[in-house]
Picture 1: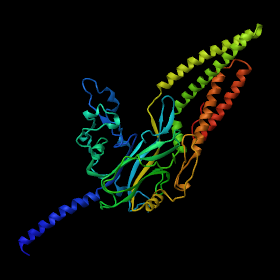
Picture 2: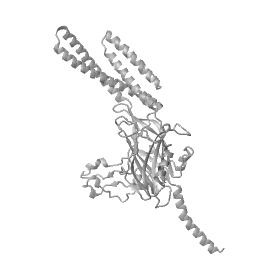
Picture 3: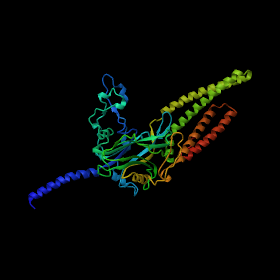
Picture 4: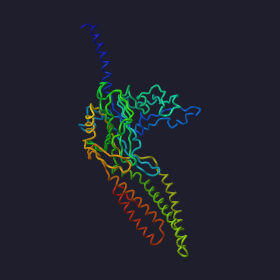
Length: 482
């Protein structure tokens, strides 16, 4: 073989490798990452209008700045391969791409105006990005071009607004939340969390998608029925992680280049929100005990003042029609109630000041793990089978009422054993609240009772209420009050 031929052959091989290696590398480095926050990164991107010197932009001020919060706390940034290693055997499907989550807290406690625990408010939108990502630690927010409102749109209605920025790509929109991708993103999906008014039910609703290319095939003309699932898992489990809840969105048949805004998609069925576990409830009550006790006293004083006002009003009516000693006795009782109300008002003011001095930083409870998966199936039927396989064996639909908050059905498509429901925790919370209210009502009544039989009777009621309250506290692992 001549030296000239060898050089030509080497050059040809180099050209071939230059075409093949980048394509293979791009395929190998595609990851699926998911981000959860109170708003969607793409669908909820606000318009931006710089403030002018003449102040004409004042009416646009609510739209200035960014609406995305601290995404890093809920960033799901495991590679697909790393995610698969932690899944139970047999869970990985060839038509599915996975992203596994770090732990996050499902419940959040806030203290204004009173202690209350509810679903973490940052669970507003789920954004799933399939792309090649820049190295961890990269900050691309400085490269983000805001969605600046064009000058022609300032006088138009909001639905007709347009942007004047040069780069309106989804990659630029992702930079706003510091989601830094290499080249073009293969696909972006967004789903909104919708919660019932009483917080006991939720569902996912398609918030839009942009698909540059499918994840499971390079065929630009291929059509796949695509769905993505979200599983809330108990992180305490190891090999067989306990599924607390499963939700999904089916966007139907799509191909490369497809786009949607979610307006034509139907919402998924209502699903039970995983209630606070017994342990999470115990931790919540223990860490907020000072707030609960002070607020219990405040609420009891308010109820006592309301009762006093009603009694005084009733006495006024009786005094108007009474005479002699009866009228004098009624007047003395009215005076006692008036003085008692003033005393309770002073104590209420002191208790309110005490509550304001307590720490007000929100607390989070009940760590969970989220697993997100994107599945592309060749047919609708295969997509249904894939859904059943991913979230559990299909056992039909179970309907239940959710008070008056959720109209329609509360349904699930997994076995009862796959969905953890703990009514005992909720029942214990209600029992504790009732026992606390009874105790503080008895305490306020005892403090305001006149000497004699009424005082002795109120002491008996107080002792009984205290015993019941302490018994309830012990039942969930809390220390009794003294």
